[in-house]
Length: 104
Image (cartoon, rainbow, N blue to C red; front, side):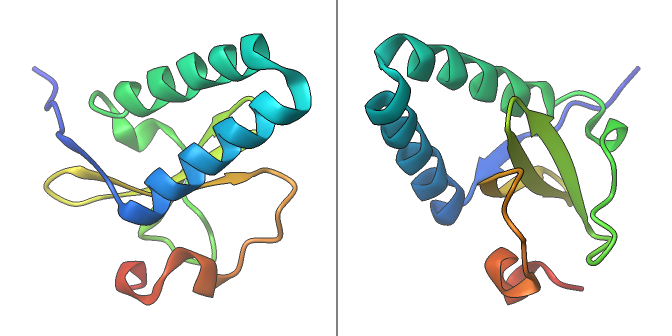
């Protein structure tokens, strides 16, 4: 039987999520924002099962990347899945953007 992980979403990831939904709503409309919200929610929920299926973030091997549309969900696996950030795929992500608490 496969383990099922609890999901914790950090305050920063929550801020990212709210900001990107607001941005998409403003730039592309309510319908597009609603569709993105559903996809992001589904991708995050899917991390409860088989969270190892997504690739490792090479600069910080303790972090993984889950793609969702044009966005990337950064997370780590401990006794649970911790969603750290949700950033646009075009961003040049730095270690500092992911926070020192997640670098080990």
